[in-house]
Length: 487
Image (cartoon, rainbow, N blue to C red; front, side):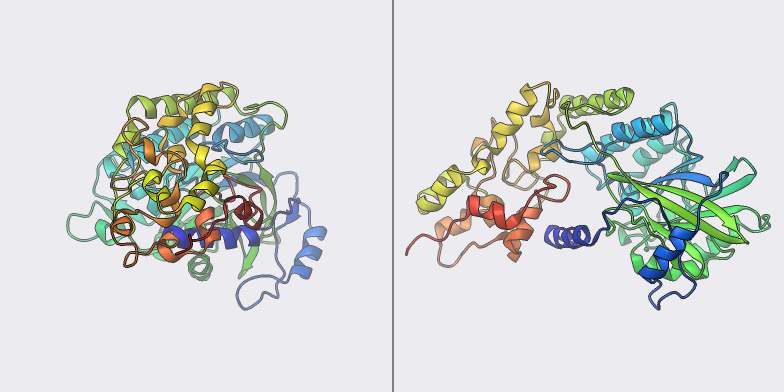
């Protein structure tokens, strides 16, 4: 999937995401629609009529962290972060299960490797450890030795994955006794493994999800509570549920299309289905019990907000220290340089910098100089120097540098402020693409919006729902609008 496609998908998902946080009953009406979703009116009536019993199992659910250890801090109103999560857990102190769906990282870069190490420290080594963490495709994209080493000894679950590696850290299931309940947690990966992980010499093998599920519950007491964390897209997850025998009591969908959890579950053949959301921004507080032999689930969403009065306020101090150490390690190991110039440019040309553009496009250059884009790098420098905002080397952190420079990560793109000063800030080529061929032959190498995406989609690659939660394209475009020079 291209960046443009991902941006489009995220925008559509965010608009569709349900923002109402109520302690609503997730149980659906028996008269389920053909696509598996309940009638909204019946859902409200059922939710109002049912109340969790005092001994219901209380579960905190999240998934698809995608390497987001904490909000970037570019704007106010950002949600999420491991420190805020653990502060919330510490304040509640009464969760029976902490479940993280998986996909802890977003890729396989040196930065992702350090992020996984840090996440493992927090989830597995704090005062309150997570009970189970699923395994997703993004997790498996990291070198297996590194991934296994970080998760070894932690509660990783991969029910339909096996490995020849002796140090394979994932178990087919995890059990936990909760009062009078015996709970078994499984994790299923529905998509096929990428071709790069298949064939002779493959160290990880994916087996049939339904068969693997049946195997881990073979011979078990029917009273056992059965929870499945399921990786896949919405359609795949819905389709597998009727094939799971014995029937799950709760299915947690791990699908990156769902930006936030929905406080009203879907009923798929009598099985409650909830989605975990992404990036750890909003948790799902769920209560699970059986009534008349049928699984019941009630839930509420928990947005992880920060302090509105104290910059950087809020969050578990121990977790904040671990994350700060991660930031410092990224700078010390010079990960910024390791990740520079790793991929080809999108149009095959080289980056040339703003100075070359301004000679032929003076009015566009004037509009750019009057915009905040022209000072994007300086905002990082000032934030780094202000301990109330950051207090760590933000100019050395790849995630931050990527949105405040031109072409970082691509051939001939930004490397360091010393080596490529003309590619600092959000310049012309960030939207229009590398200009070396255009400057030589403008008529035959015209530049539009790189990738042919809409202007709004280009903006959303950095100004997304998290980094700019109050971003309005129609309003912001007026601040940078410019046209072509007269011929």
